Length: 156
Image (cartoon, rainbow, N blue to C red; front, top):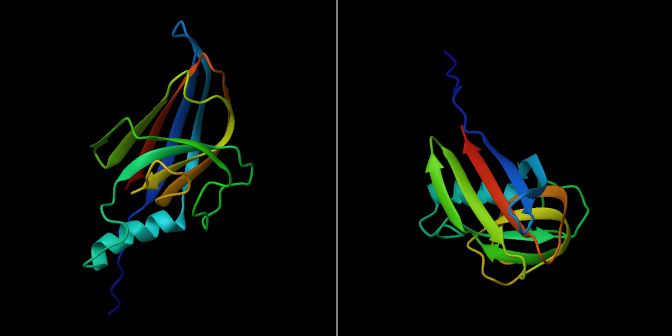
């Protein structure tokens, strides 16, 4: 008799990025499905099997913006050209959908961003931590606008 396991775990990402004018009106918005990279999947799997998993803890703590134009690929471990990162502003889990938010004030960064990434156990320094997810974007923020990110990671 052959035994088959039909229950599998799937993980996918979805990003909403928005630029806001000083009066609170929406200047630009993009909603994009995005790639969960191999390094991120490995970090999750390591939590199941290792007595000292790396990274530990498995917490997304930074959202980074970059100017790189390469298409996201499963083998990515950093953004192509990281420009700016902030600590996640908030995060919660409802029904196996983890939502992470990022906020970029008017004065802290401006420019055209072509990529974004979620980092596990990163620091404030560029290219630190384990990349969980990378997405190609094309959004411009001026020095008087704010930018918000709402990033959902669904585990089903």
